[in-house]
Length: 436
Image (cartoon, rainbow, N blue to C red; front, side, top):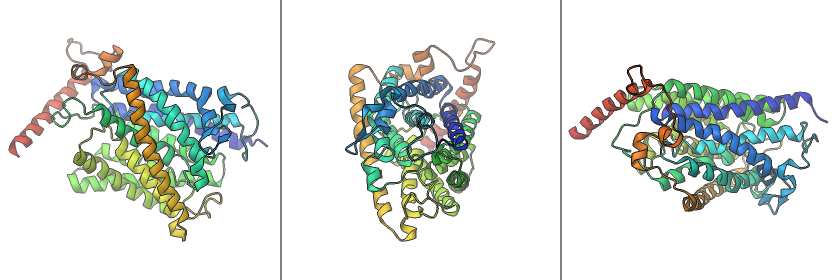
């Protein structure tokens, strides 16, 4: 029978997860230069519309339709045909509530990728790539893990999306930013965030929405939702502390961008484990996640030289991998009888299943993204020219400015501060380089 309390919680959680994508738009939008703020926000906002329609037409059917050989869902639910007010199998909510909840997951996942290629991809290519990626990469992976596919049969656990969402989007973002190439002037010109308060607002909205993301995945107002709520908060807080302390010791200054990035890293790390681990391990998961993601952003990216503009891979890809492994270490049936015991509780099967699933997600992301990118470039030009990048994609692609021009008719009001900051940063950078 339908439980109205559970239904209300899932619908509220769906709304919370919806809020995360506009929150991501602010989070990413504040980190780019002012000439690309609208482009960055537009990408997340447009994805909400694009993927919602795709989900209703075909996405839900491919993901949660009748399983076909552990590979994909049957098309028996295309257009949500036959999905009415019936109770979700083994659940207490209408299936349509589940459709709405999972729709928001399908929306935010490709939006995460946009942080990797920020400030250099043309809108037409972006829209086509995201649509193809949702159909041919996200839907199959979600089916493999959540829809009864072969990874579920293997025993892999992913409570709210470490494998399906974060590893898949983070690695796809890394692949795409390498295929597109570095931004014009990358490594020579300081590319500093133009509006950190906007980024912090976005991080706060993400943190808030994440309670629906993780606790909502219990699909009911129950003790499992309460556990996921507490573990999410504990991990996010712990990762914020560990990132800031690590940054403080290494660079000498604790930054608000580091604090915001740390909280997201902790939320990413706990996502696959939130409904399988106890609160104390969640603190450990967050502490390690903050440090690991910091070094991925501050050291690994510089060593390898790729231009992951807003650190989609460093936070989501690396954080998701750590979270999936941590699930294999600390998961326990004492928290969730439908789960499994990890290494800490004397069993190794789950940890092995998590390792295999990580490899599958990475291979699918790399190979699938490469193929789809090549197909997109056959249809339309993907990379903005150097001259277009210098002008800014807001004007080139959308014919709009993020900020009004000053009364004197000069540079945009916000842009004038940004330009001065970049000039100062470039002066310091050049002086340091010359001294070296």
